[in-house]
Length: 204
Image (cartoon, rainbow, N blue to C red; front, side):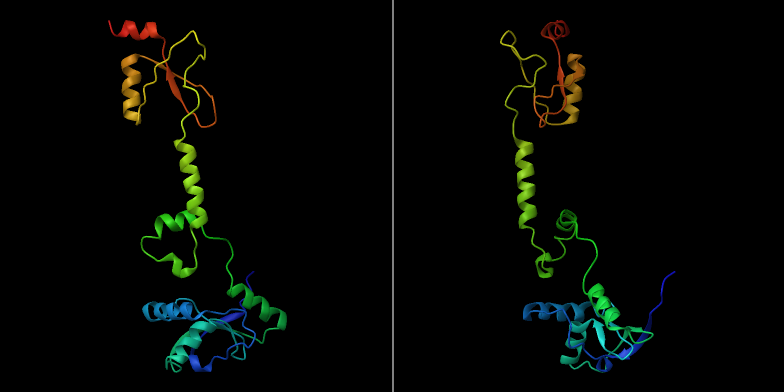
């Protein structure tokens, strides 16, 4: 069962009392960008206050509204239905000023970076870029040994490189070859092997 300890009220910003021990702080540049977002989208998240009007979350946004002459601006606020204990009060402040889970940085970079300047929100992709570069380099490395079924000085091998699956299927059909696996390293995948006599017969 969910404990409905908060209700939604409509109040003026000037009625909200900042908590003197608010654990969040903001730099001047971050504050400027926050004001720009407030002007663009308004109050997306609802501030939270104790029963006596003391703010538990939304300090920076409410302070900006007052500083810009919007103290009479009315907004939705989640209000405690009773006075919180000191333990409850501090726990709610931590919960509302932090977030469970973590961002998927690859998803952010792939799907959000082109639309939003993620640097404005404190995201640093330098480590992710380094990891992706290393992964790409490993994938691009060529195997030290040719991919053949038998490694011996008695045999000569010819390697046909197929850059895509369509070419690979076409070559396999023309040569009448079957699939074979040769794991010379963890970076080597599936390949096809055919005996020279079989190729000569196909070309007659």
